[in-house]
Length: 417
Image 1 (cartoon, rainbow, N blue to C red):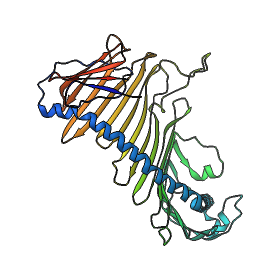
Image 2: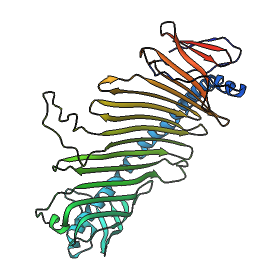
Image 3: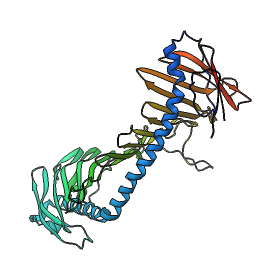
Image 4: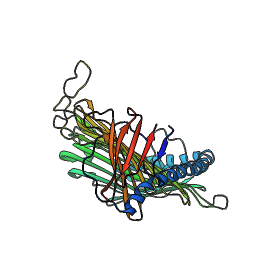
């Protein structure tokens, strides 16, 4: 989309770049200092710089992506083998725990069904800690310590903690930095009864969280190693009628080396997981109504920090506010500039797109806010403020094909699309 700016002053002026709907803002113009006006009118220059910096970000990001592809092609399988060995080790520890170590500490005897590789080392239980020491699984060194609950005890809540866990080979390592499993039952329950297959109450809630790192080892040939750090959280709850509902799902991670990083996160919450009860499906197949609906919010975030460039972040957010209500937003942050687009549904009707640009510089914050016109949502109105002081207004022109930004000093800019 090309923008045409008609200058009616020798001083450049601020604007934004789309007018897809917005709400009007009221209030009289306040006396604006020349500094405030210069700040507001200079924001367009910041936007042009912002676009240039985004291009730099794209270029440098391509270089980092190339390194990640190279790592994946040369070390990906080695790293996958290390992670697989860690998974085998945790399954072996589960088998040893549920069997009470069965009178032997030999790691090989507890490997899961279907395992066909080699495994040596010891599994030892010492009170509430279970450990693998000196383990080697398919050529990967394995050392793990886990805090465990008492197998024969009776409790309504149990927690399993991974104290430390690391698998390493000549070029790669995989490590669990934090790991917990929290289980809550409606009444005191014995884990030994569960292990024996005896009837027990189902849990009221289960939460699983793990945070770990996979990376290259520093070597003569790998001088700028790539690390991946990730976190997973999953929580499920049982509602009042026994129906299981997903309470939260979080997945986040970051790739980085000595100079660059790229991250992503996905987070969804069901705020009424403990109370929502599905209703008989309607003819449209929906199992919700105006009083029983899934109260959900979620965000998807991407971020990048490349070399000496400012950090860039893209945030997509959704929030279900009613059975037929929804709000959504897209936020782009780069350096001192933030652009946010918001839209939604209210009783099934679109509320209109709101656009806000914020630029902070020299202790002052310039905000350009464009919202749907109160009487005609196909048109847009808005204001420009500096540190909360109104210094300009935005109105539609040319049948909605342009916006006019008028400043409190009488100058104005016309922007067409």
